[in-house]
Length: 274
DNA sequence: AAACTACACAACCGCCGTGCT
DNA sequence: TAGCACGGCGGTTGTGTAGTT
Image 1 (tube, helix red, strand yellow):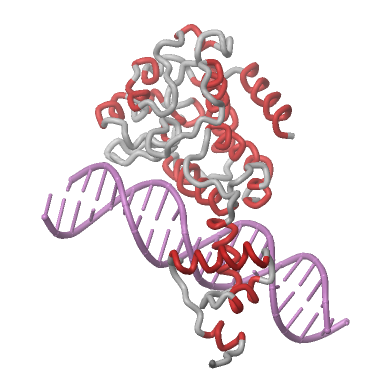
Image 2 (cartoon, rainbow, N blue to C red; image 1 turned 180 degrees about the vertical axis):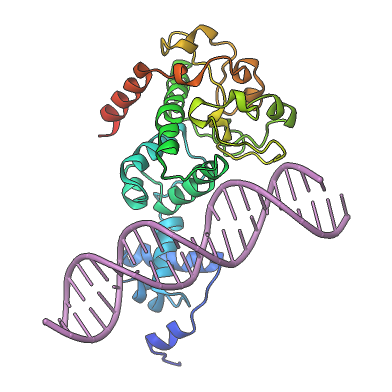
């Protein structure tokens, strides 16, 4: 049998997507021998991969604790909050989201949040964008979490990326877009002055965050509470964005989310997570 | 039906810190 | 203490797929 040095094996390294066979080999090896010494793992398991690649595959995909797929409302809220505190410290943020990897959170941020900033034509690190997040998106996420609990649904309700009206509105009909948030007059105060290309049919996954929103009656005590609960629905229901209440944009945004709401969110976050 | 586009996610790359020799 | 290997992290790119034209 041919004996090859570790360097020789690594020089013959394979890249690209992992196959099921490779996954099985790596999983079996790590379960038997444990994590760490990734270059040795690659070598002794007979994988034509770098140690780094093995480590990444295990941590981000094969590890039993890894949760993949829909990011819940609570997780979204935590990500927004922690990112506002720590910036792009993905691994640090991931530590507060059990089962989520830094890579997944990073991807989430780039594909959803950062893109929204781009569409708003402002820098993701700008004060304007951060204010929008903190004073509009996050309170609304908190509201939806509380509303879900109010309705007896789990607060960690998974939100499909394809039907979450806050972070994804690909399912929204174009007519609704035309009459809804695409109308600059319905945009949040903080976004005023930001041009919105009405010819752009593409809608960012997070565009819904700038949607007009009426909190459920009795849940916030805020100015929007008078709209009642009936027109406000749970995430995951397809036509949420088509709701008249959701699109009416009648309230001015700076008054819709008052200090009390923001205070409540901060209290919740500090109680729950820190 | 084919081409195109946008999205979500997987994977790689380069840099840096740490520990060992 | 310098050099090296390794692991961790953040940025970036690649790929598959679903939706649109």
